[in-house]
Length: 352
Length: 255
Image (cartoon, rainbow over all chains, first blue to last red):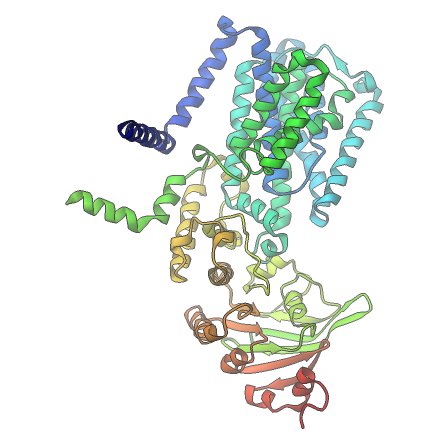
């Protein structure tokens, strides 16, 4: 009996040590990314999984891009934007129009990366317009501004006949592939992470914590807000472009408030202010919706119920304000600075 | 002359919060502002730091008129402050609290930050060292990885001053540094203020209710009541000024 508990403890200690070593290893994440990249090429090539699963995988990627970019505003900056579907719509329409009408038809495949970038940049410019009201208002009032923005975008594209009006744009080439989704997802996560762990990102965090104090600590909050909104909307536009070339059909109805709500759920499910939480939230929500498909309409009862329970027991989401160590750049560097003295003692003892 | 405030006036709607406030601060001085609750002391700080825009008057700091400048520009030009109720970035670590205050010193642009190229890595390392040195100076280095909200009250106060110092100020505005501090720790606090003043070559303007602290370290004192300056002078002069006694204790108190 006692020896068994000792064994159990030993095992737990060893597992814990393994886990620590794995977490501390900086090479694991790049290797995983590399494996992911190779897999993203191999899977469609050899049909390792059914096309249906491939489709879900791509939606997971696109939703991750959308979630991490929304998390930048709602989680890290502490604002409440409900207009994310509007940014997605702008990106989707720019990309779809480029592919359908601007580029020469035989080159659309080659020009797809450029299409996505232009869609992102175009959306970032729109993001700049939304950033300006955020100088003066925040909280609930900024939420109303983003809501208004969403309605404006939706009614604009509904009323311009040249881009299909309410009927939308059908028959877009299917150019979104698993490698592209993988690439853009990793890029979105990487750039967002870099941004957060820079001086600008710390400015974003300080605005969430206390905007007046942050102004008085020399943070240029206008610059920070403009940057945050532009990065966020850039990737929302990228997500929209990928989405349009996957679904092959876009219309104003696709980008309504419900779409925004989906992304909000993913952010608050996974956890505010967390890269890991964004991935987790987008993956969990997208996969759960598919897994629960047999329940038909009931899944829209079950999912909100799940959310209610989550908010009761984990009000900041699964990973709220916490981060997976792999996603913190320079974690070791900081950690050694914090614990300089004990570490020196340990090495001394080992030398004896 | 480091700071020259001339006829500073602020109305909130019809309410006169500060009227005709004048103050000249020489480099290296330590001046106190006292007055009953609601006398407009914190408003003066908010006017100097750009949180509020004055209705009238001018604030000249280091030869430049800073009225109308945004708070972050004013801070960057060399005025730092602490708050009456501690306003740390609670959910961030101690080192991040300090690093944020170095925001205006960054030399890399947003592109370099997003792709971690160019000056980014070297500069970031520099800021970690900068923050750690400052934390070590204020004996907070052991808490660098803690969340600010988890620090005990006294250390939060100290962190707030550390954070203010990270902006590299010439003028430090202290808003009730003794608030919530045990009366027998006042002497320590006085030594502490004198110490940072010497170490960083600071000019200090402070608001305080604790008379022992104000009388103990301030070279000059201004007394505000209902937004108006009712007295000015050395601690000794202020102690014997009938107007001040009246403001604090009510009419007829001088008998």
